[in-house]
Amino acid sequence: MLFLLGIIPIGICALLGWHLLFGKDVQSFAYRIRMEHRLREMRKEKVRPPWLEKLDRSLCVVLPGAFSSELFLGGSVFLFFVSFITGLRSFSLIVSVFLGILIASVPFLFLYLRLEKLRKRGSREGELLLSEFLRQYRISERNIYQTLERLVEEGKKTRVTNKLLFRLLLELRDTGNPERMRKAAEEFAYALGTNWGRMLSYNIYLAAAKGSDISVAAEDILIQLRDARNLEEERKRMNSESFRMTTFMVPITYVLTVFMASACLDIRIGTFLYNQICTAEGLLFLLLIIFLFILNQTVLSLVSNQKFDY
Image (cartoon, rainbow, N blue to C red; front, side):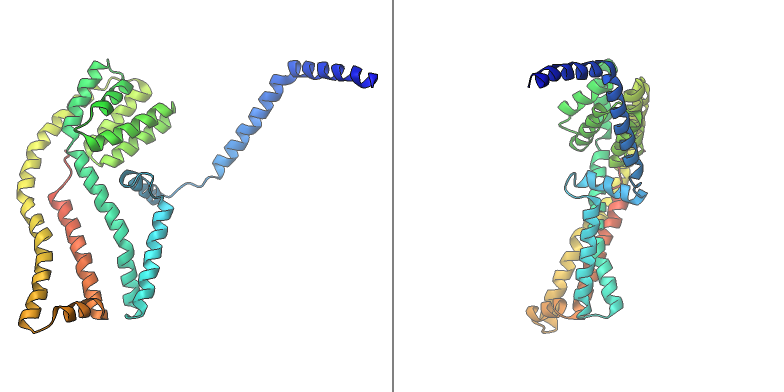
């Protein structure tokens, strides 16, 4: 017992001495092992294909945090198989495959329409955003972080771009890595999808990563946006009528067709709806009508409601 009582303090002193002499070397060795392990894990990560990264960006803009790209693709595949199996009961194999592709493409079409709608709304905030950006940039003595903070706090009239700027500010403050800053700026530019958005995001990146003065570049963007305003108003007057006619006339025409068939051809409305929904030919034509209507809306949206840009 006395031997143990004597050896314990000696052991403690020995361990303390070893720690004082070699503790830093052991910590450095352990840190190096952790870093090598982390680098190996990073090398194992697969590079995502460009189309999948684009889908990730689109979902992050339209439905932030709601769906991952894998879940979105899985849901689309599920819709394809459900439509395909259901179609086999009434249609041939080729028609069932076509029907499955048609139904599975609806989520992608919705995602594209929603993304373009947000881009158009955000693009029309460009002139106001640049004016306020220049004002706050000068008040903040060319401090880009304070400028973005002031824009987020006072951006009540720029709701779409305000959310994008808030996300960009969080990314810039979260990292000092120029590469991550560049990617955050690219996310902002992708969400807007405009030339002035790409120019502004690149200048914000330069101001955040290198401390460059971007006031002259921002003024040039604002001047070009003011010149584009006149062209945008003229295009809007020319194409607004066709969009309204398609939006309202197609559903009204379909409803009138049902009543005309009932009145002139002596077909009851219940019989007409049964033939339209519960028969193979009627269901196929109804799905084609709906799909072509959505496709027509998409084309007209691209033509008549273009983004405000230069």
